[in-house]
Amino acid sequence: MTNSATIIEDLTLVPVPAWWENPWVWVGALVALVVAGYLFRRWLKSRPVPVIVAPPVPTGPPPHLEALRRLTELRAKQEKLTTYDVALECSDILRAYIEGRFALPIRYQTTREFLGAAQAHPELGAEPRRELGEFLEFFDGIKFAAGSADSREMRETIDGAERFVRRCIPAVQPQEVTK
Image 1 (cartoon, one colour):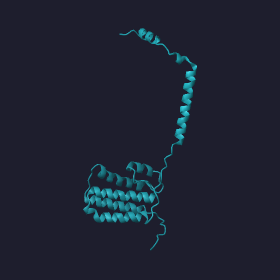
Image 2 (spheres, one colour):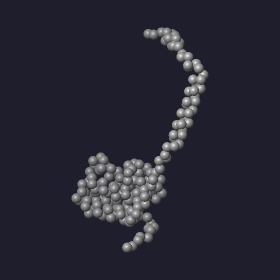
Image 3 (cartoon, helix red, strand yellow):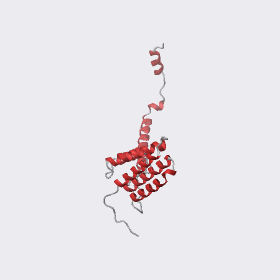
Image 4 (cartoon, helix red, strand yellow):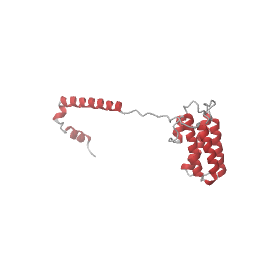
């Protein structure tokens, strides 16, 4: 074992450099810290602030008409597609509808991110949010977890998506332009 007195004695024999005792070194170090802090703060303020851009207002038919049209097309070609393709298409239809109808940037968010952001949306109530969360989690299970569903389940899912879109149609519709 080592004697603790020897260790302390060895440390006391370390000479301190002469510049260490010079007060101008400490003043210079303090000035350097203040300047570095000032420059860092200035750099933080000059960085661009990220701006969350709302999706553009869609032109053309109202979002619910486009979603219902696409769901009808999907229903017609469902038997020719794989479960994965149906889930991918139906998920895309719902995401496009939600983005167009509620101006929520859902297309490039995960299900969890979207459902977290949707909590604060005044028009999207608790029941539609729950139902949409179930749809998106079902689709995620097929798309990412290699889940499966038979054609009856996929038909029911498409029917459920259509009911969801119909339930979320705004009560007051803007005047539609006739040709």
